[in-house]
Amino acid sequence: MNSELSAPPTWRKRFDLLTQRLLLMIVVVVIWWLASLSVPHYVLPGPERVWDALRLIAANGDLWNNLAITLWRVVVGFVLAALTGLPLGIFLGANRRAGEFFEPVLPVLNTVSSAIWAIFAIIWFGISNATTIFVVFMTAMPLIITNVWQGTRSVNADFIELAQVLRMPQWKVMTKVYLPTILPYFFSGARLAFGFGWRVSLVAETIGSSSGIGYRLRQAADLIRTDQVFAWTLTLVIMMATIEMAMMKPVENYLFRWKKDAQAQ
Amino acid sequence: MNSAELAQGVPSQTQQSAPAIRLLGIDKTFRSGEQTIQVLRDVNLTVGPQAIVGLIGTSGSGKSTLLNIVAGIVRPDRGQVCICGAPSEAFNDWCSVGYMFQEDRLLPWRTAIRNVEFALETGSIPKSERTRRALETLHLVELDGFENAFPYQLSGGMRSRVALARSLVTEPRILLMDEPFSRLDAQTRAQMHEELLRIHRLKGMTVLFVTHDVAEAALLADEVAVMSPRPGSIKEIVKIAPPRPRDVTQTDVTVYMQRLRELI
Image 1 (cartoon, rainbow over the protein chains, first blue to last red):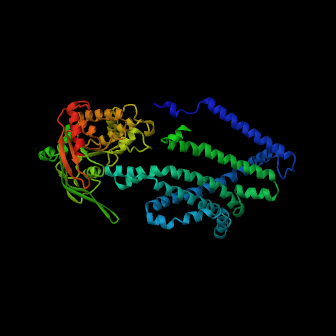
Image 2 (spheres, rainbow over the protein chains, first blue to last red):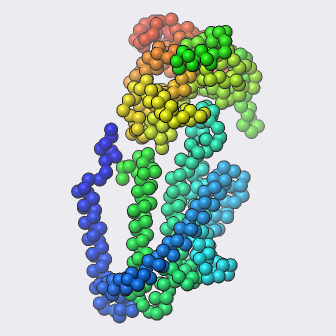
């Protein structure tokens, strides 16, 4: 039923898209290569230099070790942010007075730069894992709270009334009406928070760590190994894109398959 | 519900033959800030078992409030509500009440069958039992094959059928409906009327429905209770004599429609 509505894009369409993306990549690399010809390699290394640097750090294990460490810190900070942000967001949404009272706190938290959090973190935690985790946490948590809070406001009063007519106990209304309504908001907040978490983890690692991609980036810059700076950057971009497309997008598509526009796109 | 189940749950013969709904001297006033609005004054209404009764009146006459009082989601200030002969506070398993809203109110993240199951998730009925009964009820409203469709994939009429199935899946002895088909187009509404009458012949539940449409009232109801403007009370009860199924082109039906129009 409605198979023409929910049918996946045809292979031909997918192939076209793939060709387009590939073409774009080639264009970017060619422009990069042309630009690198006219400047010294420590200002802008060419693609082949960066490729060599990438092979080197991949071969000696540097790449995987630092990637794993950074990923671990981001995930821990993010999970802590989700675990505190979800209940706090629901609480602020459910309790009008608390919500009104705490409302100004969130924009303030959001405007504090991650570099400032990093400096505080160094004062409080020194050079350690906790510094990066703290920065990720402080950046991700307000984003998740804000989104979940917004989600609680969008709960349909008609559905609550329906549950009342059915004499559904309050905790079941929470899990069967509130939670499914909030979930899309939580998810988009979490996605945003995870992306921000990655970015700010680098800032934190640059100034408050002795390992991780951010630390390696600064080290490479200090040694004027621009090719390695590019190699680490490339690693990050690929990593982010993979997580986004291979994990977040499919999970979102599955969870929210009941949404009309999600299906149509 | 099979007869063994019924016999087990029924406390006494008198309660079984008692009126399905009995309202005595219902008053209701809403307060919003300084303002108080009396919506119902001394409402008395008796709905016999298996009857179909329409509730009609101008907007603001408290029809929906009255329905919500019967459903138990609004408490009257004064008066008594008896459901199957018992005070409404003591809801019985053997005399449950189904409610169908003006909008379908289907949860968009649930498939049709899961929306029907929602009504059974209040208590502790096991999952397999819920699914079996939901399937049965979807079959009853002739939606076989659409169990796993999400609401956005269904037409207005189909969504209305899912909502009807959800209000019927608990096997209610009383079905309350608040302008349930008013959002459908004329043709689909006529189909839903037939559907409702067919299920009523099959299941014999008592139906109390609110409508602003005199044709709908004259087509479906055994009796139509006409409410006066605010504060609402039952102004007159019109018995609709012609046997069902009825047609709006029948002269004996149009006579009743005319009569109802004059009364509102």
